[in-house]
Image (cartoon, rainbow, N blue to C red; front, side, top):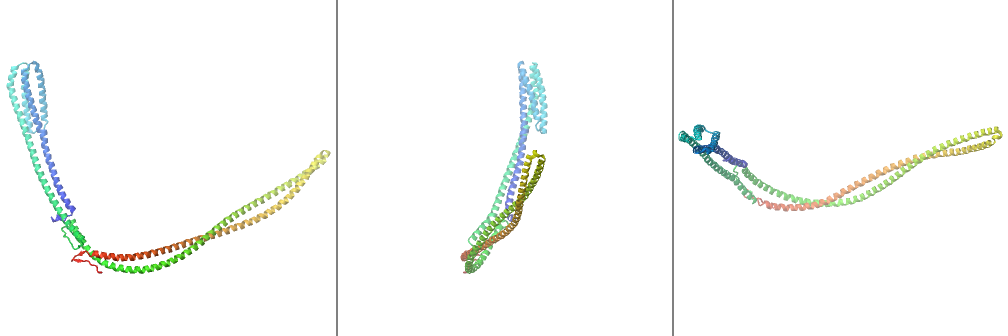
Length: 523
């Protein structure tokens, strides 16, 4: 029993249910086995003895009908004989069918032997019967009637006796099968009732045992929990086993011991907290004074940093404006340099044009010279011609005069163009020098713009740095002010902590430890 008590609750429940289920399983298997036996007996009755009795009765009934028809045939006339003979043929076929059905049954050797003897007797009777029918058919009524009272009657009584014997044997076998079925049923009923009673008894015993094993320790645990709830830490429970309830009892004992130790530690901690809270309050007062002084200094520093920030921001703005002006100057200088470049290009084109004009004037002068020579030749030819060439001589003279005038004009234009070309060359040289000077100016302005941009960037970075410093100082000022507020809150919390420890000491003092001692906190 102790072995069972020391098992886990789950194991106990499992063993209990397995035991009950085992009994129920055994009962079910036994019931199925007995039901199978009853079913076999019922099957034997339904498929063997009942059909044998039924077929034997049908054979007897058919035999009686054959015997009755036999007498009707003897007493009948020619008109009824044909109908009766047809009915007898049906009876003969019925004999054959019933005999075949009977032989298909699961017969015992005794049944088979008895039925074989019956079949032989029936065949002998039918031989005599058919003789009687033949005599009656031939209208030998008296001989037929005498035969029915002789050998036919003996055969009929013999077969009737065998039918009775076969029927009684089948009935006896059926009754024996019924008796066996009743015996199996009664035996099964007794066993099932016994196993059910045993299962119920074992189930009740296991249920009561498990209830005591589980509920008893739980009641003790509940009582201990109530004592702990009433601030009594002196209670202990007895451990009855090593199952879950026993482990629970052991854990509860450890819990009360741990709570007692913890309450004592809390008592000592309360005293330490009281001392520490007083020191914290004193230190917070000193820290509050120093924090207020630091906050005042930070406010002055923040004010100075704001002024410095304003000055640096103004310098950065001026640097940005100067940078913008230099950017504009650089852009204008670049545009002037581009204009000078276009002027230089234009002067070069003018120089080329002047050179081409001088060349054209030279061509015109050459044409005038050739024209003059041609006019001179024409005048000579006109003089040779005499009176006939006088008109042509006048024209040649005019052409020569025009050629001379064209040559003189061409020389004058050439002189003017050459003077212009020299002036254009001089102007082009001056424009080239102006372009070079303008490029140098543009480069200088670009360098100055770069320097101003760097100054502006440095000013912006300096302004951002000052802003960050100012922001940091502001945050330090805010943090210092918050620290001052937190110091005041910490001082208030220290006083509140002292009050809470006093209340906690009062609560801890309610617990009663072993030895009837109470925890008291000295003032």
